[in-house]
Image 1 (cartoon, helix red, strand yellow):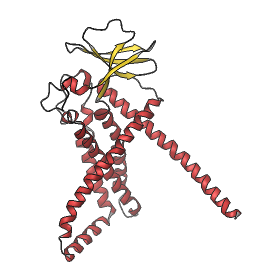
Image 2: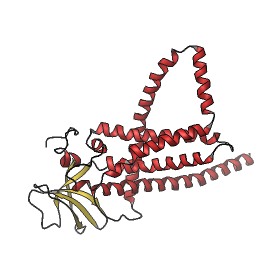
Image 3: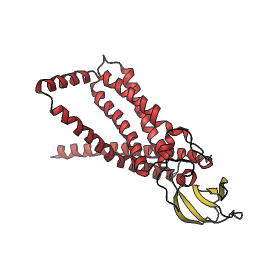
Image 4: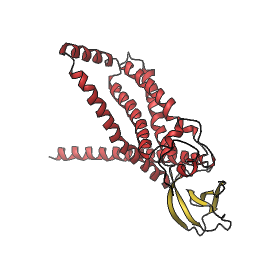
Amino acid sequence: MDETIAGNTGKFGAFIGKWTAYTAFGSFLLYLFGYLTLRFQLSTYGLATNLDVFDEKYLFAGCRFLVFAVTSVPNVLIVVLLFVAIGTLPYNLLSVAVACRVNAYVAAWCARPYRLSLLGVILSVLAIQFFMRRCFAVGNILFAKHLPDEWISSVLLTSPAKLSSYFSGLVAITMLTGGILLWIWPRVTASEPKIIVGLLIFLFAVQVLLLPVNYGVLISTQQLPRVAHIAGDSQQREGASYWLVSDTKDDATYFVRDSRDNRSLLTLPKKEFKLEIAAYDDIFCILFSRNHSEVRPCSSD
């Protein structure tokens, strides 16, 4: 009895030790994802500012990104189940002999891990090159009269549902790379080329890091709070609208746009800071809906 209690106590202590390490690693990832989200969000707005190394905003931004990414998984699963259902129908129509030959060929092809590794590398490179890194073309968006001549502009001006579907596609291709990596990892032998597996691990890490970057550029930049009144600004322009872009411990930065479409970023100290938010506006609709033919359904307000 005493040995059982001692054994359980030791297992519980080992679990607590590992749980502490897992919690620390998870917190680090949330901070990292939050920092990437905020850093590229501000770069997209065109705000040049130094972010503090430690700030609780990173944790909140990382949690928002993680929740958005997790809620994208059901969309991915729906599409996967749809393709599986479509593919199952012709497979069931095959004869038993043909189905056995297909199964044997697939099993033999997957028996060599380097083949799946090479496939994962190719898919990852294509995803990074043609989809995930395209967001870097978007910058200084608040001062631009037109969006850049990149297909990513159509993503920024599409409906929220299509924008969410696009991000779900990025999550799907990252999950596919991770699934291939999990499948081949316990099956890699000494005779297999390790360089391809190492390259796949590196590319998978790049994809994971590019997810919060894309979230910061494409998703979190959509809405800006419009401020009704700014305390401390004695030179408020007539007919100008103000949006809060960044809020730090010492100051706040606003995006200012007047009736003549003159734009600027205004930074004010946070002494006697009073903030009155009138609404949350879709900033891309306000800035670019008249300059592009295919846009999201913007309201007429």
